[in-house]
Every structure is written in structure tokens, then in C-alpha cells.
Image (cartoon, rainbow, N blue to C red; front, side, top):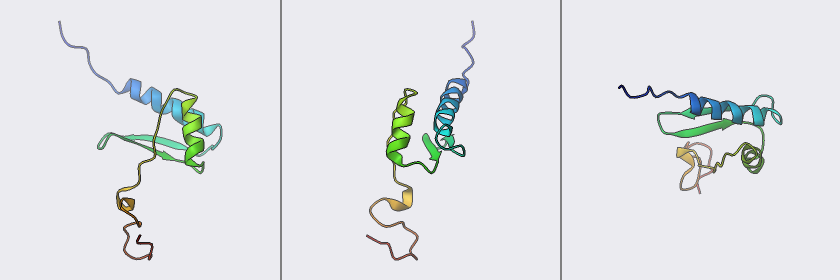
Length: 84
């Protein structure tokens, strides 16, 4: 007996459900799972607190994670003067 083939279908279903929920409020919202680092990317004009509320309605819990350059203060670009 061979092992069952693993697929990304459950993850794809969750990603589609999150996208659908967000698009009720932001028609251009995009949700992508980044398999390289295991993070979820959410592109939307909605406030982070609102995104968390909406995703909770479909059973998802998300937390804000600062971009790599934003950790430790400042954006990390070296040119905008925002160093903190």
C-alpha cells in the first residue's frame, strides 16, 4: 500500500476562502501563501484590525508581522530618513 499523495489543496481552499471574505470589503484584495517562508501575504487597502476581524469570520487567526526591513525601527531603505 502506498502513502497518499500530499497536495496543497487544503491550503489553496483556505487561501480562496480568505480572499473571498476580504473581497466583500475590498474587491482588489489578494491573499497569497509564500511557501518559501511559510508566511501569508495579504494585499489590501483595509486596516490590519479589520482584516483580522474579517478573517476571523472564516475561522482564520492572523497576526501582523513587520517586513524584514522594518524590524528594529525604520524602514531599512537608508534613504527616507525614517530611522528610529
